[in-house]
Amino acid sequence: MDIGIYGMGRMGFNMVRRLVDKGDHRVIAGNRSSGKVDEAVGHGAEGSYSVEEFVRMQESPRVLWTMLPAGDITDDMVRQFTELADEGDIIVDGANSYFRDSVARAREVRNEGLRWLDAGVSGGVWGYDVGYCTMIGGDPDAFEHV
Image 1 (spheres, one colour):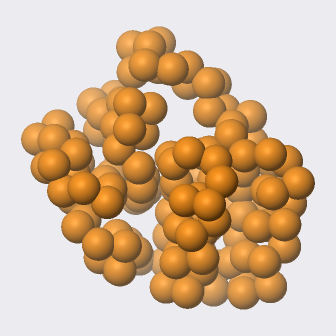
Image 2 (image 1 turned 90 degrees about the vertical axis):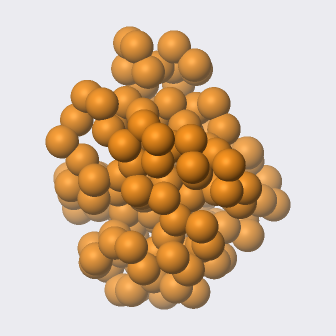
């Protein structure tokens, strides 16, 4: 499976590492600063150096997973993904956002023909070793795909 994870903080970076090291996945790593992308590439991910490239590197149905802080930065990224994605692509919000924000984003994304999952992620920096717990809500077909 192809999956793109945008946001190479401690959680996002370790999720990329785990998917590369312990799974059979093609993982695209994206981040606003290139150094973290380079580091993920050093661990076996494929690197993207712009949001456009991040989306373009996958074929539909894409899995565009954000691991960014909740709030404006996630809103901005979801807007960019929505503008660049194709009908049927899946946007996953791993920001542990306030549920009302997730409901509003889901509605906006669906109106554009995209699918939405909100995925609260737990596991911290230990998740690489022991795995992550994700509390997922959203489109059932998108859930089955991911």
